[in-house]
Image (cartoon, rainbow, N blue to C red; front, top):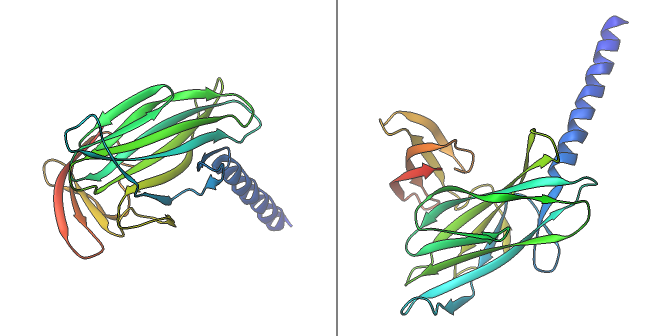
Length: 224
């Protein structure tokens, strides 16, 4: 009888944790320009090229998504992003009345904002300015805190891919179908065959990337 009770309470606990996890993941969402929810771990492809008037002979590709609080309580929503790869030029991310520019691979925090209860949206604009090669991917990540709480919860993650040869939206667990081996600056292997670099803590790393075609490249990677 005692064993049955323990199994019953264990099942209830598992169900409770499952419901809590699902609720947490749905509290905040990325939306497209039509107001549709973009599922977490989706890759959004941007391919519309325009002339960049701020640079001589330069090009730019710009896209916009939105953040929305879908919970029945106020949430403090933080936005960070990871420049996974960039061949040339720089990336600009604008949100929360703030814009940041970066031309190197790394993870950056943009800021946070208190979203009241309701379905108001906040835009996020991502722009890649470049000369000839548009190759670049950027991962956007949200985390949330309830108003007055210090407990931080993981939110959705999406990847923006600048690629004039592709179109549409595709679900993806890694940005390019490849993997990453991560070393510290002394050459000690820390992680093998990661599919994303967005979870690395602050620090300086050496990353060996193997893409879907088997091409291997090595570079310094900074998480700020």
